[in-house]
Image (cartoon, rainbow, N blue to C red):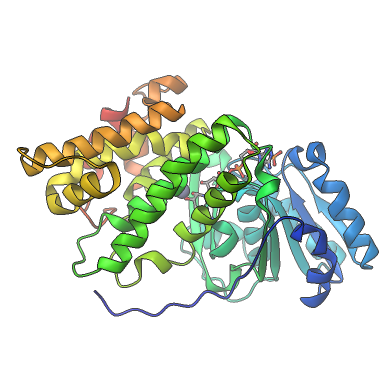
Length: 389
Ligand code: NZQ
Ligand code: ZN
């Protein structure tokens, strides 16, 4: 295990009905004039918008709004939010939605006090030194954005999707009411679950040795998602399944709690972001295609970890099999599971052909080789994309 520090400042408020206390929370964190950030209408359909607005008004909070944050949030929309905050003296940002809404809110929060272009934070041209405080009401189990400092934004004009991570953009609080996820459509329940599992993979497939607790934490999240996603798909209002998926999502990517002291990989996320940047497909959908191919491409770097994964997570019987056979059986089980719950298996399923592979591979390594389980150069990324067609 490597040396590490861990801090996570986000207050989690978990439970049915907690979103109705939003007025209290905003007041507690000093919000008087807020920007309410949300997506393309799901919160209006579910009634969450009306309830939230009423609680805020009852608490005497002045509310400005930024609707229509896109799935895969766009830089242009973030800039609109920054302008609204500046023009109205906004002192707190409330994000109500999934990862896209929360990521958009974080970028706005960092952009308001910064004199330059907020895109600088995504291209390593500038470092975040301050940000407006944000709070969230989460409506979709997936990204972990509710308890981490990362934001992923798309510059659609340049077909670039980039991330930043900062200690200044952790939400002050996040309200996790699993009943708010009952209305998540089937496909986004699937994609969110794939995303959660992928966050675990990025941390679990590590060259770092002597980390048994971290490995078991990772395996337990994977097993819990595997057990619960089918139940949620069968019955979208299953309270226990929705609660378990929600907590898995938060635990899987909250500043690295499950993988402290371990080297992380993140190459598959980097590759997927290049696909989404051009073709605007849901993040989890892209990961369901890319990850099993990444696994096939890299598993020989450390076969024992893939054997452990196959045996512990998928129950592969190693008796009479070589390590390679066991490892490949675990990878196949992953692929089969993604297909079984309804995730696509090929880029072609989205109408994506080979035309832009070179550009995607080039952009993925723009700042150098990616990944740590196996360092991937441009030709490696190209090969994984080609396997994914
Ligand atoms: O836009 P609305 O109307 O809200 O509809 C959304 C959207 O269409 C809908 N939805 C959300 N909650 C719902 C609901 N529909 C009905 N009922 C509800 N309760 O679901 C659709 C997808 O929402 P989105 O927020 O885009 O999904 P997700 O949470 O998966 O976020 C994806 C984004 O997060 C980034 C991804 O790259 C992508 O841009 N990521 C952020 C990370 C982070 N900040 O740490 C890490 C991840 O790896 C990821 O890269
Ligand atoms: Zn992800």
